[in-house]
Image (cartoon, rainbow, N blue to C red; front, side, top):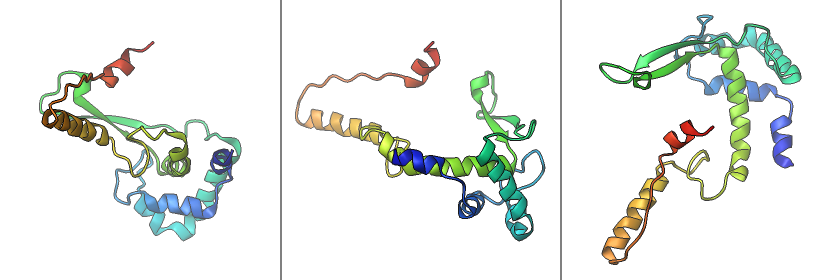
Length: 165
């Protein structure tokens, strides 16, 4: 119940400003050509318009038609890409969409620790996705030293996820 209150509370001025300042100033510009450096530099002039946009989204849960358009560029991950998996998709979103995303991500971050189980090793601050492989490595080392037999199996979750209907 407390999580729902945190997630559904109206956006505050401080929350919006914190979201703007948490975004990198020199990142790639959005389709409108603006970066967060522009927004931060001229904050006192444009903050009312930014707030109107954010409060409109907070009240109605929608953007104006066509506002949320995004350009996607495929950047090669390897020297000679052959298949689609050899590319990394990069999305160029507008700053205003990023502000909303940042606010929502910050809110989710504040409650996710209560929702994700203790054995989950990722998605929660203070936990690392690498904790799992490190624990497995320690277990294998211990079993060798203790001369104990163990049974382990690995599931390729990426492929398993992709093949689920």
